[in-house]
Length: 223
Length: 67
Image 1 (cartoon, helix red, strand yellow):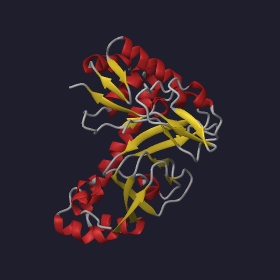
Image 2 (cartoon, rainbow over the protein chains, first blue to last red):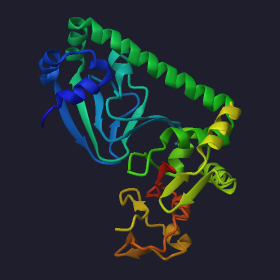
Image 3 (tube, one colour):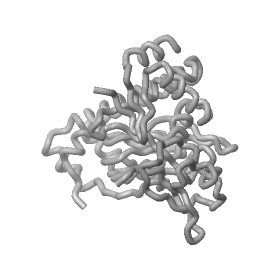
Image 4 (tube, rainbow over the protein chains, first blue to last red):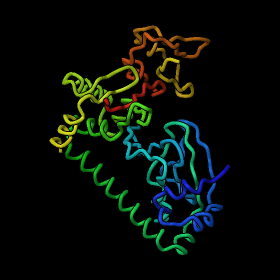
C-alpha cells in the first residue's frame, strides 16, 4: 500500500500544499480497496474517518422509506465522501456505494483537524470545497424543482458524457432515473424521444450524442 | 469478449422474468442460477433490467459524444 503524494496534491483540500508539506501529511492516510456494489457509508451512522475517492466512482444517494433512490452526485477521484459529518459532528446524511472497483484514501477526523490548524490555507481550501458542494446541491434542487424531465435526462447525458476512449461514466437507465428524480420508464421514453429527433443514437452498450448543440438547447430551454 | 448485461447473484431471486422477456435467449437458468450467455445477438433492449424486481440485472451505457 503506497499513498501517492501526486494524488494527494490533486485532492482540492490539499492542492495548496507543497511537496514537503504533502510528504509530512502522507503517513496520516490509509488506502482501502472496495468492490463494485459495496456500501461504503450508510445514512445515520457517525463518521470518525474522512474518505476520499482515489480511483473509481462512488454513488452518493438518499433512500426514501419506500425504497426510492435519489442520487445526489457521483463522486470521482479527489472528492471527499463524508465531509458533512466530519465537520458538523452529526450523523452521515447520505449513503455511498461503489459503482465499480474503487480505491479510497482515508484520514482520521482528529488528524485532519490538526492539519487544518497547522495549515490555514488548507482550511481556506476546505471552505471552497464545501461551498462548491453547496452550489452543486442548490443546482440539483433547481433541476428537480423547475426543469422538466426531458431537460433533466438531457442534462445528465451531457454531464456524464465522455469520449470514445473509455472516459465516460457507465450508467443504467435506473441510475439515470434516480438522478433525474423520475421512473425508469420515463427515462426510457425520454431517450427514445431524443433518438427519434436524431440527437442521440442508442447503440449496444452505449448512448452516442450525435447533436450536442441541440441537447444543450433543450437543457437551456427546460429551466 | 462481448459486453453483456450484468447480474448480481446476491440480489437475484431466480424469478425468471428476465428469461421470459429476453428476445435473444441470452439468459438461462443453469443449476438454479440465472446465467447470461455472451452473444452478439443481444441488442441491449434492456427489457431484462426493466422487469427485474430486485435490481439484480443491469444494462449500463457508456455515454459518448460523437467525434
